[in-house]
Image (cartoon, rainbow, N blue to C red):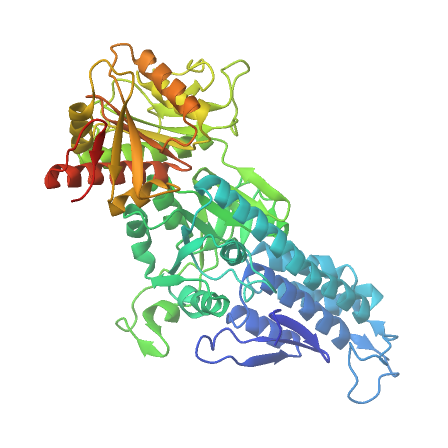
Length: 578
């Protein structure tokens, strides 16, 4: 079988029986409408795009079965044979009734009804016309999936940076769920080809384990590094810094952006929101149901109790246990970072600043817990190139930074405790209830001179102590040279054997500190993405908030190592192992 999971051959739909995977790769040949419906309802064929195309082939079979007086067919000939001529009379009403049965096989996924409705318009023209339309749909699916996957990969890298990424996915969205390439897994394939995948966490996807049986199989087939986990471990993986973005597919997307997908998706979206992690839905345009206003109108399929009370024929619950077994859940639009189709990003959360604010607040709470942002000290920011949410005209200059507000405990921040400030003029945008941090000028100095995506300013104790001890009174900048430590690799240096970190004076006027940093960074284009301020902590930056935080952690660990080894040689200060 080639890369397509659905093939039309000699009057039959040929596919992989997904119930046998991963241990058995067995072929299904479906020749009747009943066989098509059974394959869809028993999940031998599953995945919204795949069941849509399978349903369309079912309409081909139905039209052929209800075509009469087609006496030109020789014995054994069928639709698809070169010598076959569909000259019979179609019982349109009977074929349409069969199309209704197919469309109703699974109610939640919109693609099934969409595909059946698309090809049923050709029934009166005969089975060959229905087949031609279905084959066009099959060819389109691969092109559509690749385009959507590429757009999604581009978005992930814009949001998370050009580096190997730790990703999480749910259920199965690969070629088994479509016809080729896949949607969310297609995006993983594209990122893997770019060398941008460090690891993929695969939810097992209960109760039928599509993630364990199918996604793990597809990722192994593609050579993509991955780890399988139980569904309930996903939020902890996020909390422990093992997830940069979540990528999922969809079975229906309503006009307002609510997303129906395999049960467990809603929980992932809640976890991603809490931890400030992008939650991206990848699907073809055919999955968008613009005629349905909100997710409240979606009919969620309830499946058999036996899927929950046991597995593989083995009972795991007491007999007669009552069961709640929805096949899908609906994720509200405000938890979705973006919906990506073959047309690009077709929906972006109308309050994108909220997602960034949550990420800032989460990072601040983590660093507060380590004692690096005591009380109201320290601040964190991210760059915002242009508004992707409604803003009042004249509200402020762009690009801007979103920074922690002044006077608030960093251990109690929420997404609302941030302020937009213009990078060029260091002026807060109008109409905000919070005031920006006093150290905003330090952040704007970095953003004006570097293409940084995020800046972290903290008062980590070992780094602050070392800089205060090292600073030479009267110097505009004290160069602090450190060499010979493995931790230097954490700063992304061209030569990780040595780093020269500037130590700036702590002027009472913070704007003067920012001006000093601005001047230094312009005059030293190769300066590392880290700096000290005497008695005032450290500042680090990176492409993403995670990278800026990682560099702060690395710098503090390096300074602790220096303090504990006692290496302090001066003029200019040189620190290294013996």
